[in-house]
Length: 458
Image 1 (cartoon, one colour):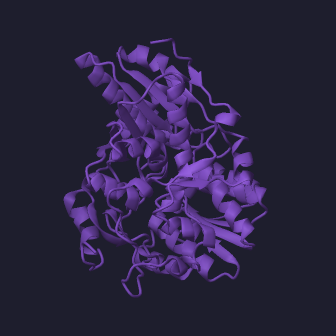
Image 2 (cartoon, rainbow, N blue to C red; image 1 turned 90 degrees about the vertical axis):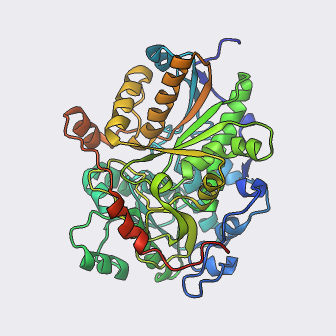
């Protein structure tokens, strides 16, 4: 095999001009979202009060295989895309593995993550519709930062409800969002009915993405000319994020490679769904059979320990219900959990693929995650985000298995972003103060007991 460059870039001309809709090739579709008032399947028009119309259409469209990327979005992408596919030669050497390790690096923008890929699309469609502003939530802050960048570019006001524990741990994320004119509110807050209700029940809560979603949705639907946008979980988000996988596959073709194992961190599903999209297409169509591995935190293990059931997408129980792997919409991750990946559920698309056996899932403790993050940083000179480091942990483990077996597998993982706003967590690890928290079966059961009473299959 010819020598592969350290960094593999597509040219601007080689960049994808269309997003790929994974649902178009799925043998069985995810179960429909349900209207919480009627418990009947959602129709596109039901989503218009929440999302702008084009995004509502993309959310419901399961037939269109490829969706044209608007020219304005393509031009925006060119400011930081194509992102590099990098051969991890130094990490391979340090591990002594025969495996070939590649990673797709998405940290080449101010948000420091892949989130900008969908943020610019959603802000563009909102501007095209003539909306007056947007609301959203953010966990670790990458999505809030990315959307603030995109909204600033398109001159759209933005209100961000940030999970309170992250708001307190990462004050500089707040500063970056405000640099791009975004308004940041720690969640749960007293600015919404949902927030006040959650605080009344648990005054000392550190919050969760489910809480923040409730507040952002309420703010959107009660403010004229505003709509809500989300950075993960939704079908539309996985569509936009397919740019990651499409670029990865094209770059690997340039060096005559194809992954045996594809690994991504898993919180709500945006990065993982985007990375695996074209490879999962090959798997669904019988063209190839790569192993696909989702890696989630042991403190928020929706795939590995959750239930495949209908649940609300938010803690306040005001959003549509989705059938997904869930820990229960009231689940609150431990406050010592570092980074994002703190959502109670998983993308309905990924949940269905996992349920049907097309992909695997593992959970890892955060001390092991940071052990891998530090090793990776030393070898590859990029300080990874805690979320990304979950994928790094699993990639290292796979490479060490290759060392034991002598197999020269090709491993691809997603490096979703950088960890420069996560130094509190890094400091906790380096000082020996990091604690691994794994919820007990009894704790998880409390969430399962509150799942809505909906038939399991429709």
